[in-house]
Length: 99
Image 1 (cartoon, helix red, strand yellow):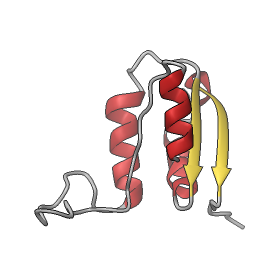
Image 2 (tube, rainbow, N blue to C red):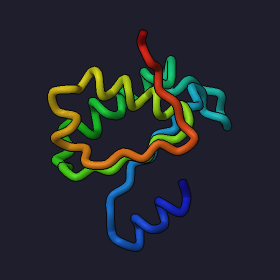
Image 3 (cartoon, rainbow, N blue to C red):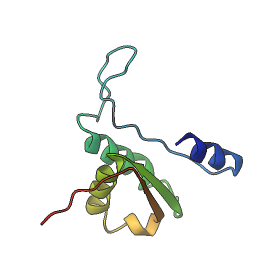
Image 4 (cartoon, helix red, strand yellow):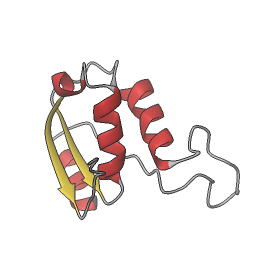
């Protein structure tokens, strides 16, 4: 992830990093709001910071369980998701397939 962030900074590209792996602050132990689950965290961030951000050429790198979080976002925001997101890269990631 760090090389992607470094490259974006050099090119003056805005970066948003979600880390849904933690639901408590590692230093204080205080519960992080809206982080009951990984998907809850991702949904909260997407709805409150991305949907109305004005960004239209979003590139997403979804690592590990980030793929499942992104899949949930795609389903919930299917009317607007692809208006904003232009590229998705999955790195060592997974999604849930329904049969």
